Length: 176
Image (cartoon, rainbow, N blue to C red; front, top):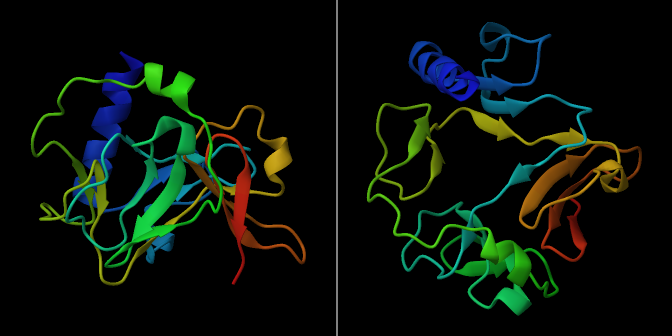
């Protein structure tokens, strides 16, 4: 029942404001006009990327996935015209892949935030020319109790602000 109510709230939020704020009881969509999707800070949780057994052949630029086409050499990748490795190292996600669905997905099934439709092929599509997604923010990845392969967070730590991705074995960090 909670899942149905949560899904309804997200659906209503996306239709009314074209914004979704998850886990933040202090902000409102009205005063966060540059945000499409935001997660509360300080929760020591991250965003889990989709695991793919085959990299999409022609994804939209900005697509980010956990490439598990070789489960013993999994890597977080993003697409900017070509696939770019964000991990820099292999991870064995064989056990985690056993828990992933193997049935064919429903063609065209996706959640779109920021627009009523999208031609981009993705599970979650954020469509906007003026708004962004704010990643879950943590002060240190070591405080995340059990990171999952494909987890992505923003580390907001003095002198160490950076994007962090977990490929199932190790964290990789990207600093500006």
